[in-house]
Length: 556
Image 1 (cartoon, rainbow, N blue to C red):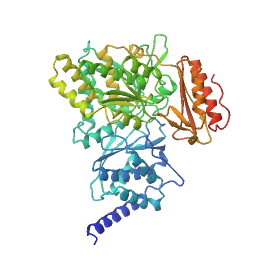
Image 2: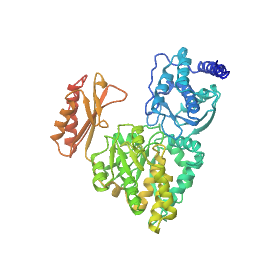
Image 3: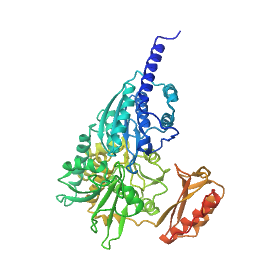
Image 4: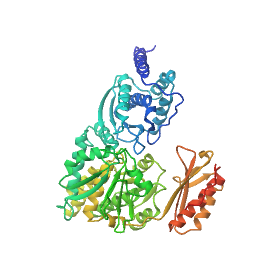
């Protein structure tokens, strides 16, 4: 005999699906459009995304019911041009959407109108979702002209499944991650408001810089906001920092296009300062990306030569500082730095040989770094592009807090207090340009470092990144965190032979995640040798992996 509960659940599901179909008609899918949910969520031209936003509102509700938690939906395309937009879902602890749910997102976005019910029903059945379970969605958006309309489509999806939401409006991506984590820890991670975020960060920052020599001086920093949400939010936060940090804003969104000739990605790729910035030699500059989850620093020396301090330099500064505090506090915690194959060899050597900090390599993509970093008491991870953070295990946090209260000497207690301030200042859910900026500023202040001194910790090996177009990128398979190729046969042996002919050299190739190109990275003792090695590896890829078009030409 079946219970009376099953027909009741079936009736509820039928009612929900009918409501979804009615609302879905207002958000038609463009014919022939196929998208894939990846690390960055969905991204494409804004005019193609209305149906995707509606459907991600639906998926967020299902994820919320499944996890019995608040789920976030962020409308942004990060460092992409202003005409684009995108959407990412945020899981309960502020992390990215679980990988197994990325397939559901892709299937839902690509379903034709007549197949939408079937896809939803399959997710509900596969995940055994109780449709009577309440759901709550936190929604945020960036400053793109299309973002407000698209976030309304998300809300339409949420309400069509009769669920609750809070629209946080204009927020950085990391702020939404923070809010989701706060809500799901009942305030344990902090107060789940943007005001709470500003207060938590500014308190920790002030307590740290008060320990610095010459702490009465107000530090000055030049910030390129990429004409995006980061500038808007940092301006709001400025009042909390006025007594300790003075910020000169550039590309603050009052004029100029989002990410156009400015922002962290532009500076990293072009290896030069943003357009329209008045660069004064030896002053500190930093750039956020469009949704403020990446940061890079830079300066011009007295000869007006540009110097970039990217994610590798940031990871080195932060991990060195934490290692020194652990030694002072006499804390035996397992700490590691997680990099990708793109990390400069000099940074890896410095960390391993000078600082004696273990370094691990993960596949390219923030989620891979984040997962690896979770294996340690303290895991520092940054991609070279400036996206990264520090993760502290529960064990590490408890030991540090206990030592702050009961440490045997004043020096031990002071070191523990500084570590506790770092824990409160960092956004452990995701890379956060504002948090990372404040951590860097605090460390430079405490060490009495000018930006040049930080830059001199190690010297980057000259490197070159190139790409080769191929008929099918799937012919390249990699292993060892993408540092070695398994197929096609003979390619890795050829790369090994080429690398042996140069000093301090290294090279690897990996397929692009989105297009039929193979990405090549090479580094060596001189720029000329790095360029030459990169070109020779390109030729090897072209001949052994099915290159198309013209044979790669030498650089210069």
